[in-house]
Image (tube, rainbow, N blue to C red; front, side, top):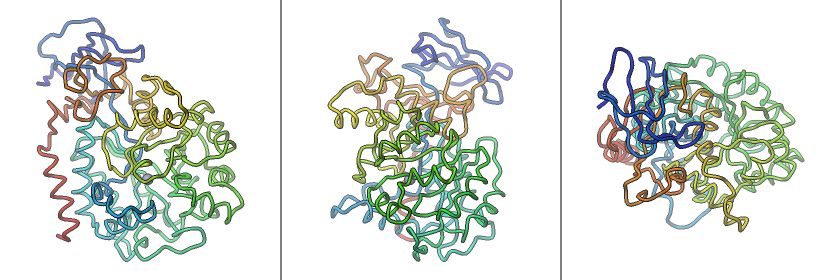
Length: 445
Ligand SMILES: [Zn+2]
């Protein structure tokens, strides 16, 4: 059990992934603010240290989430279809949410993430208003529901409030999309200005996509970001590129470049169908690219040029996006495995590069640059991964990312507090929590 000596809580790790690599017998102290105050290596555990077996990683960042998509898992696989028919199912759920059901579903979805070792999530949030498009009494009621959910689940949140104005190039929002829109970017910015960061939450902004924000509105969103994380869905589907070329005679990346969107605080999500020039623009501007491989394969999007982007200067983050799978190890492995299938080469990314995407780069993308590392001054966010399960027994700890699954996460410490212990979340039975939240939405209760 976790114990406190004065204001210090101590965790002793059998092995931990430090900036110097996997290191044996590491003691991590945290103060009552949840920050790391000391990291000692080569030491023995002493009561009352909490012992963490296996290999301990820094907290994992899930850099791209739509919490409500969790209600679609295992419900969109019949009858084939395309990304666009999947989107019709997604709108069915979006239509049914209210602040209360959104909070319950997101609490369960974020608790599932905590069980998988996620200590910080970036929620790309656009279900802002009532179904008919009118504002709730609190215009940020839906965003605050997400913040309450993350607090209840014990994880950090970057609430990425998303500007979503049109239903496609030159098209108004459809009936079901009305609740996403604020009318124009000025009204969107005014609403977002009322959102303040909290002790475990920060605020970011997003341009939904070049489909959903007309070019003349983009500068307002960029100005409102004021150095905070600025995310954007980019070239997930070929159809978006074709329509963008028809509308603007430019690729989506070029449009973002021309309107001042690209920079080191920017994260491009998906970045699947890019030209060589697009890759140069993203890398040259130091844009983070967030791949969501389990979503991109589920939706038949394609395989994005991850290594080429990395080599051009873009750091890579990872997200579970629609949550067909919530397993960040699987996302990281898939980044490498999809590259292997695409190129016929192994070793496109080293294990440490994959772990960096899950930790440091993911947190930077979400505006927590001090997190994702086990160092003095960093938040005490730790993920203990067992090395004695049927999946992980015998693996080299430095290559654990190629073997572990979410089921191998034993203990998750967030801000010095153990949110998951022995594979069990503070909130109890998360399967039941998910079932109840999802059933209530589909049955209209
Ligand atoms: Zn998305």
